[in-house]
Image 1: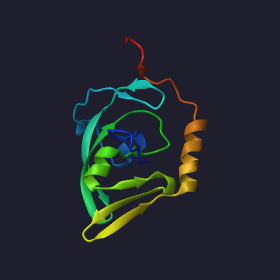
Image 2: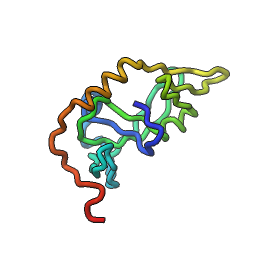
Image 3: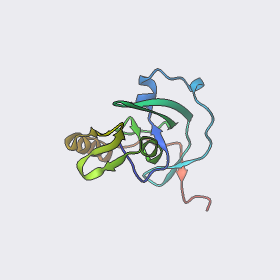
Length: 136
């Protein structure tokens, strides 16, 4: 998922495990994140990985969190800026310069709808988080 409003690139457990990463691979990251539900989520840590987008490869600092998501990752402004990309949410695509041409990453509206439906239907288990308004 591309989230133009987020200032952090997020990695979820499925991708973390799928890449055979270990907790020892993470560096400390102790700033809480605010979830879509308005709760503070404590991360497991941070990891820098190279992400290839066709001919371009950029380093991305992912914040790893242990929470349910139908997505494996959320790429945000840092990834978009590193790539020099523009996200077109209506058309589910990202465009970025590469050499003398413009490359394009196409998404699928039907798959995006399936992910959103899964997120809405998923009954989340109690998270180890606190409300963002608690303690204010």
